[in-house]
Length: 315
Image (cartoon, rainbow, N blue to C red):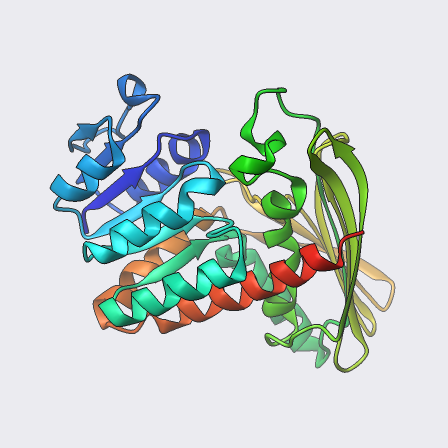
């Protein structure tokens, strides 16, 4: 499947293009308004480079568009791509509001096209392994404890600009709102408590959240752009605890080791090397080939609604 990449972002260069190459995608067009001269396709790949997004959408013969631009432009570019008949994948957050996400989902359904948000960490096989560990014990997770925080970014980074869709709630909130879908069978939270911990000028730079779910389950998380690097998830249940390092951005070139404590007996479980972006794209391509991609739109909209609720709860 030929892909048109809108935006030559760091994420696109580091993770998206290598993942497409792993899947054997060789036809890739790239549009970049600021870094068109720096476009470097993977070895063996070929395609056109554009310095204008509209021109790329008008001229490219790709089947799927991947939007990897600043957050505030996602909605407009995804809408244009859908209107022109492309399947569309958008970096998280797909839109800046649930209402915008509803509009895009309606358009995708009308056009009969796939619309997916690239919150990809849950596609790594480590998450299947965690669920298997709990399943083998006859238990289910009841508590989730997450930390995803990193040092401050350069002052000119768009994440410090509210008008560009910056702030930790939009940037890191998608990792918080997807955990219930992964471990609590898509149950909606019964309550959300969120506190902004620090601010950086016009945006919030860190927040903490507590969500409670039906059946006495809960999730607590700390997210931000203000601390030493931490990327960790603990999944707890009766008699079982699984600890995951690099939980939200598993490396594509290294195996993952899970720490498992079962009735106070500790062991490790190795998960083979995998690329979460490649696994995500594989799922998207297969769904498109089957003509069965509604699940992606449904997840995008559910996550957008919950992200809106998280932002409204923030104090």
